[in-house]
Image 1 (cartoon, rainbow, N blue to C red):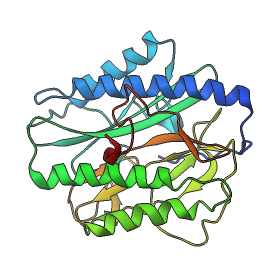
Image 2: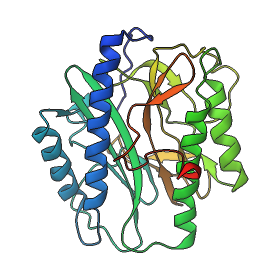
Image 3: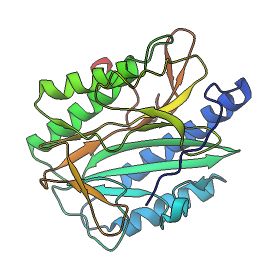
Image 4: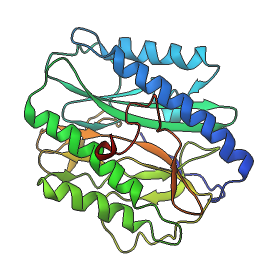
Length: 267
């Protein structure tokens, strides 16, 4: 259950960036279709098979499969599961919420994205949790400015979450991405002045805040993968792969046809 971080050039070549645009669009497409597949009565295993086949049909490989021993092709994190939930025979129930984390490996690069979906009808508290989490993600994206430190991203996310008195998970963070699934850029989703790497044009990384209805603290299940909230309260997450540009940011897994295409306040 350990995420490997690999040394890789932080600033990508134009060739790698173009490949990442394609892989990012592919990841976004698979995630959107997977979200539309979610409904009460299906199992997370069925979602896994569906996502696996969507990747293979596109001549891509589902990056999570066998990554550091992870046994499935997608992460399915239900209700109090923060991240890295393993698909199994669990049946989704009306009123659940589920995060689907999809990564496609295509033409030598990874496109990583996730979103949280309602299962059937959910209550207002859960709707608000999902809405604020998506807003937090896009506040973080808007804080991507060349020449500024990565800590601006965490500050923007934490500020938005605190407005609704929600928790920000600290143990799991955004990461550099490219030819490797996880590179050594670390993107904290809360403010820490030590997270002071300067954003430079050509950098690619994920922004993927996990926002909770209670504590930010987590505990691990004994499968060594599944992280849950320490208080058992629900949690949501969204994720995009982003590129720092000369003037700001490009969202490689956003745009028309994505589950979270743009900032919610711009729709």
